[in-house]
Length: 399
Image (cartoon, rainbow, N blue to C red; front, side, top):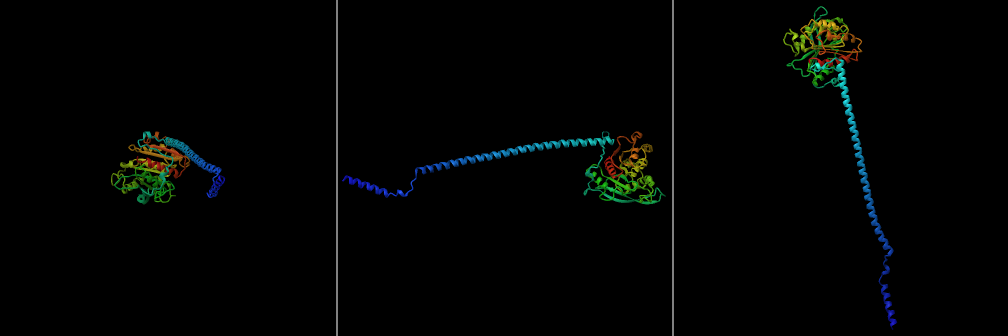
């Protein structure tokens, strides 16, 4: 009986176990649990490792960035040093250039016998016209007029003739003001057009316009006449001896015409005494015009002209001893300034131009180191010298 009861209990247990459904559920094996656990840990480790790697990469990137910035700073520092060295070098070069320029100016002053220490005005000359003075001005430029005036055939029969000339008037010319006057003479083969002073592109006009605009000089009038005092003045091949009698025309006709028709320093309406205004009058010229300046201007008309500029004076120019002798005829009149220039390669004029000034300061007390410049430089018988001479003289005259 007991045995049967035990068997019945065991059967009941087996039946209950069979109906629980545990056989349909996938058991979680211990290995799999371990495996999941391991995976979770592994994943955790991977994330941690990944984070560490990323951090490491960021650190590496930061280091690279810092290194790059450091390199850039180094480069910048290097560039700054290079620029500083470059600037220092430029500064040195600039200083050296300034010193060289100063040396050149000193040499020029020495070569041209300019004594600024004894001249309150500080007169000096250059060997080349600065470029900015050769640039045509389109504002504040002067004007050029063509005039005609009555004179005589002084080389011929003395009959009355009419001659032309060109006149430069500075910018802002005002009849209520007074202006100095320069008479600018041409060479043996030229005429009133040779200096090019007949239109707005004139180099003489350009130089004057710039000198005035920059405040280097006070405005003055320039007259460019025909230097032949003959009825045949228009013929450039006519007898050159007509050049030697121009002094009569200058004194009797041309200067009085300019004084009467332009705003100069005239003191009387009839121009009866031109000596009173001689300090406001100058004469200069190239080649034959240089001869006229020395022989006629200085030698015959010192009482009415006080500034003189000779550019490559021609072979018939008076020698220094002849000039000294003629100056004795004007005991009451001094020379305000005498400027003479010639190119050393000038086969025509270097001899006579040199003879015109040789020892001149020891031959007359009217010409001294204080009112005289003799400038020589490489150059021929051409406008390279003559325009330079004009530029230098324009800065000297009427000071």
